[in-house]
Image (cartoon, rainbow, N blue to C red; front, side, top):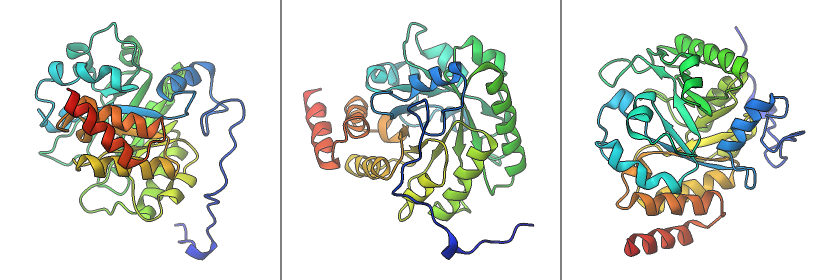
Amino acid sequence: MAEADSKELKSFGADIPMKTEGFFLKGSGSLGWGMKNRLSRIFNPETGRTVMLAFDHGYIMGPTSGLERLDLAIPPLHDCIDVLMCTRGALRSCITPITDKPVCLRCSAGATILRDLSDELVGVAIEDAIRLNAAAMAVQVYVGGEGEHKCIGNLVKLVDAGMRYGIPVLGVTAVGRELNRDARYLGLATRVIAEVGAQFVKSYFCEPGFEKVVAGCPVPIVIAGGKKLPEADALAMCYKAVDQGALGVDMGRNIFQSEDPAAMAQAVRAVVHGGEKPDKAFDLYKTLKNES
């Protein structure tokens, strides 16, 4: 068993950007053309960042507040975001096939809020991901959870399948109630997911130490929005995360549960792609909300 290393000996070099040869995206220089092409649809090559809309909550939670009617909730947000993150059932039933938005397809399944959430399996065959023209495949990874071994196994299977067909994998850091969302845990989880082979990682923002989490992860990190926050607080979290190295957000409840989801999505875009400060972004949100 590995010995715990000394905190004093660690040096993350958080002020030194990681070099990326031959491609704009962190840690992606050695990937194949098809995978780079899909990643460049997810991450805007001009800013190197992304605004993903997560509305896959129903696969474990059922009709989540704000997503009771996917066909009514999601289409108005289409032009405000970069990537749709959803299940194949939602995609086929509620999203028009003429969309030009890349799809990050939820590919883990097998658990609900009624049971152990970490007891998952690979729920989508690679052939179906290809049929759906997925730009990426997402898998939940409960590092430290009861189902850790199985979750990492699911990640391995999807990474192997994705490498065969040029489809990147998003490893989603899932934190159970018994684990702390601090820099030490998130640094461990994101690094494990990246080293197993995920091309990008979804994690939570934490204070202090998020810049060390990002520096210690050799692939891009996008942050989860987590529970619903007041709009001003959610925009401040976005700004701090991007300022400390995150390459975007994969936000759900803080957009679709907002009083004006489209206005909130545009305000998030202003922060992520435009570098807008939180107070200015909140003013934009209020202006767009009043106009609508």
